[in-house]
Length: 48
Length: 170
Image 1 (cartoon, each protein chain N blue to C red):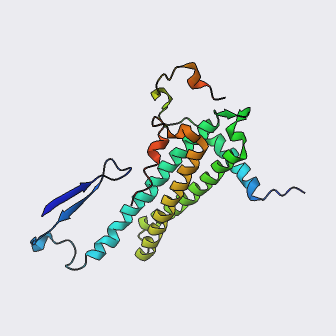
Image 2: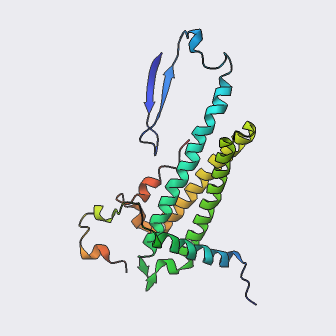
Image 3: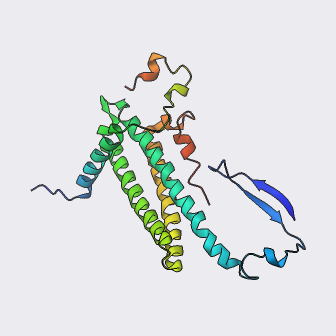
């Protein structure tokens, strides 16, 4: 039996929906990455 | 009357507080606000918009902080995966948006109570609940956001660092 009402499952659903909501919408938050020194340097864009 | 000191306040660039000294000040009768000796009544009335501003403002700041961290966690990779794929991160996001939505509901309920001119005592209670809960939630959400971003969150070019000084509104 899978318990689908646990807080952990609620967390999975909540985060899934919130990520979709945030990432699918345009943001009115100013993109601040360009403010960094040498923002265009290749290593600035590597998130590994 | 003398302005003794003007204070800057954390997170409120457009506002502040000051210490004003009144000594032997005479106020013409027609300029008295309310009735003499009943300043508390004015305070009880004015605390409502003032505290609603703190409550609602904090939620906006916290929501922005969480959005910054959420977007970051969709890009930043560690151990071969986006960090949002780890529950230590995504559950912080879930906890944060849950608290934010709960606080938003309370603040909205207080606002409706005020707008409809319902029981003033209930309005004062709900406003105080809103201010207390929303500012505490904001601290937690911004802290969660900072934890998600790690050292990147401390960069001053990221607005998250600005968010950190705002929920201290009195």
